[in-house]
Length: 338
Image (tube, rainbow, N blue to C red):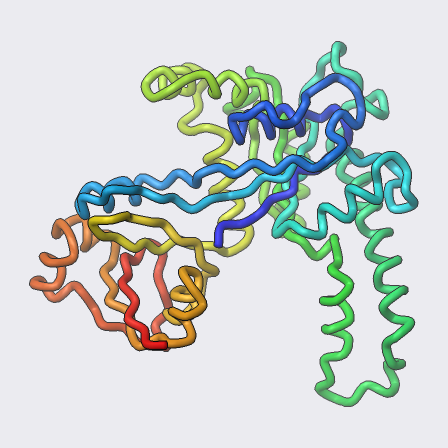
């Protein structure tokens, strides 16, 4: 299933620069003025997973297909967006379509880059966006509530309220990943501003990562060893993209299972706690509807034994039924009948 992240934030915090770098495109115009992104830009990126490469090598697969993650670069938000200020209405409509909010916060000083409020305060920036989302939610609930029956008439066990909130598509219900955009020298350890953001994320049960959009932009032109050497010189073990993806998976409670064979090896994203038929449904609804069983090998066994044939001989290939809880890294073959 992958997931779709909406990149949001105030103007000139580095949203479009980060989007360009993460998706390795120049689809979003990065410029030093508000509202340079008028239409949402969508970029697909492959989710890096070393396990998939190892599985494909063992299976001698002709194709390797990673999970895809979508980033949506959404126009900058300003105070009053819920009332239509700036590009507010468009912003709020676009953000309803994403699974999670990647909230970029400026955590760097630079006199050459104008801040919409003429100050660098990531917590205040976050409050502006959160307030506008909350005001939009209140308006949505008020509109829905007009057609809902009074609370005194709701029978015990009635889920009318739950349906009301679900239909309202509340923006403030979406999980948030705070991205602290820092200067290059703060990319490895952060700074006083990022500490405040991390404290906020912890208090909310959200996630936070430190990223330098400038560094990510440099990485676009690099490959392999050059990229690894550059990151090492900066005291970084991996790119910002990898950190954002890992934090996003944790935030949304997502895991990965694999399918492998001569034609292709492929990674599939599924919600943690899913049973085998649900995981099968990520491939095709017919797989879930007609699920019979799943031939399953733990990733460690698949790699250690060298594939499914050896795993079967060693008794490590299991026949799992409808109640099996799929584990992260499982290599699976689904049997179904429709």
